[in-house]
Image (tube, rainbow, N blue to C red; front, side):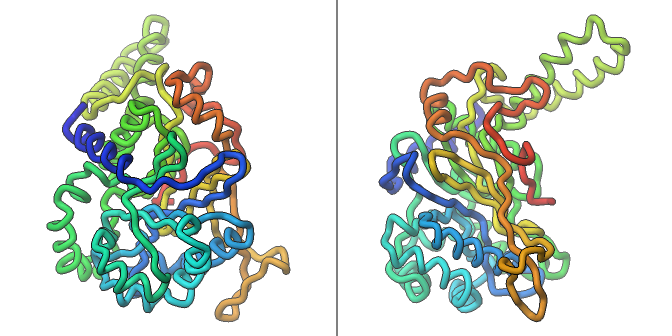
Length: 378
């Protein structure tokens, strides 16, 4: 393992020990997990959540109506750029009002997990000062455990910029980045837009989950994942496939060039396991700052799902929402679905026979809709 993976494993081990343990029954419980909302103060080109404010409030209303518990997995508030008092005032009547419906039911119904952009909540006095007026006496945790085999945590642990040097990063963002962001229309979420950073983070998180025999549900990268191998493992398998084709390939010179390119990519990162050993142990809820909606992870009726809430043209009059004289429909799409008990057992045993499509690299899970990830750049 490289240094980043070593640091990530060590810190995630500690998170696992210190996480809140929630009562959980796979077949009975209903849970929704959102992360990376980055709520700010509704200032143009700074607050990227504002375009999805109504979608989020509507989604929470539906989950509350259907008896779901709510887990917010870090970076809910953009405290690196914005004062928490201003965030609370901006979303008091929408996002916070809907979250309070869950919080009022008790601590098992509303669970908050700290991220790097809202690491202010590691200070209990700050939580009481800024969150309690909006949500009541809530607590913020480093992670949450569902039984013995599922850990939910933000996923920044071991990331140099977001964890090790977080104090310096926060200062730079608050006092220099905000103005530049408004000028250039750029994002604070560094991991969300840098492909190599996301790949390294995915690889480190996957390797911890695989080596510990756990299912890890994270956020931080803004890239939704549903049990996939990290990209590095897919490169390894592609190399093997092309090398087998080389002796009989009609254009071996071109194929050798492709193989050499993939080998260079392989040398740029540390791989966490062979293709045949890959396990569906790493999930990511994505984020709330997509340009067209928010993604999340659902657990319901023994299944785990990757879903997206978004606006669509109004078709059903019963689903219409009126805002500023415009009519539109908010809908939920299911991208991926699998039996959670089966995944837990597969990961616990550490074997995954006949579960990977050799052409695409995707796990053979019961699915609905599109395969693959929902990328924040969409």
